[in-house]
Amino acid sequence: MNGATPPPRPTPLHWRTLLPVALALVGVLLALATRYGYHRDELYFRLLGRHLAAGYVDQPVGTPALARLTTGLFGDNLVALRLPAALAAAGTALLAAALAAEFGAGRRGQLLAAIGTATGVFPLVDGHVLVTSAIDAPIWLGTILCSVRALLRDPRWWLAAGAVAGVGLLNKQLIVLLAIGLAAGLAAVGPRRTLRDRYLWLGVALAAVLGAPSIVYQVTHGFPQLAMASALSSHGGTENRIEFVPFQLVLLGPLLVPIWWAGLRALARRPAWRPVRCLVVAYPVAGLIALVGGGRADYVIGLVVAFFAIGCAVLDAPPTVPAGHWRRWLRLAAVAVAVDAVVAALISLPVLPVRWAGRTPIPALNPAMRDAVGWPAYVRQVEAVYRSVPDPAATALLTGNYGEAGAIDRYGTGLPAVHSGQNELWEQGPPPDSGTAAVVVGIAPEQLPGVFGHCEVRDRLDNGVGVDNEEQGRPILYCTGRTAPWPTLWPRLRHLD
Image (tube, rainbow, N blue to C red; front, top):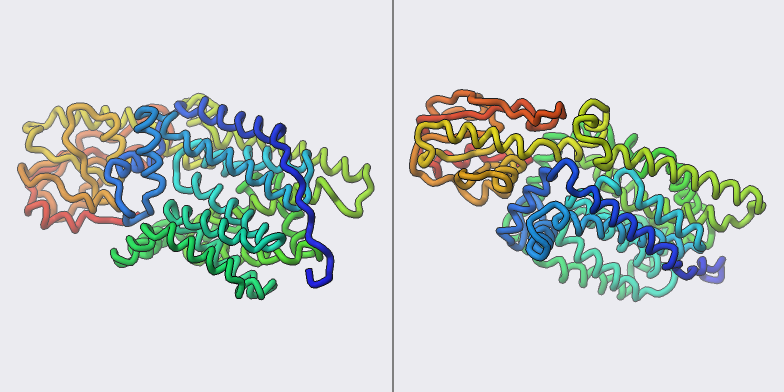
């Protein structure tokens, strides 16, 4: 710009090549949707979906609303619940191809970007289960794509970027990280005049309007997301900080690191791409904020996918490389994507029978796999304990976390309404005050000081397949002699994590 090297010319999207990739991805994800079982977060979203609100203490309304929408339309089953995640994964792959096209990638580069994104480690994990990060992925990449178009071609694309980011605020506030990173990048490396562009600020205003339910909820409820972030940082922040930098290498897969690094490097060096160099700064800025806050490594995966897509454009159209070398690099990249896809599928998807998977390192590598195992078995144990108590009608049912509560709600028969002190479930209130006994799931007796006069362990949760997850081995208690009315005791049981 300013008489310097002109920006790259976008290439047409090769839809006939790309759509089969997206459709195949959706098909595979839905075909495997019923393997293993619900993820704990999905059980929670299913519960929250029946109590839709402007927001919740731990998240906006977006993902619970999607859970309610798809299960209401297609039935209360895993395929229906996971349909939005599968579609989001396919959308992310297509957006990666579109971003590669913005930087001049032809059919091969676009195909490489789509397949590499579709089969990356974390994209497959998120595409398999309905979690907030599954929906966040296309939000981040869509915002980045619109921002690139605004910087390279037409500033009116800031309106589209704002619209996408505003919708993202209804799902997860992490999109603010990207906004801060882009603003820091524009201030540091330019083009600084963009910060005075009216379309940029109109886009910001549009994001605020579309995200207003989430913003208003936070303001009127004392910014509970800050308390939630602090709680998450204190619980798992140290581990997340240790893992943050090395895990950047496995977000898509170790074999794909050279490709996305090539994209980042080209952004930093090519004169024609100077207008979008702010992305190079956005990555460490957003990453540093996430790191200091104890956030997970995948919080910035949207930028990594963007660099990968740009790297695919670099491989597809190298400016000064002889044709023979160029084709060799492209073939090596294709092999890397293929090998990465196989490894990622084994780690990220329920390919192996659950009993086999339990004997492998996969549960340790993929926490989402652990959290999708054993729920029906756990609920059967709870039912057995509940049926054995002297007066079931006067016995409350408590759980230590939302996964246990959601599983009991989904699979339980002949059980009372379940209550939990975790996150938004605490806000739904305590059990009825009739009776002084309770079956308590997943909470050790020493965690209930002064709540009951006596607690005894009646059983311990066992998924029966040897997968060591958060529930495995936790007690099922029968507690009697409640010491005070539930409204008095309920504040003691609240926890954010």
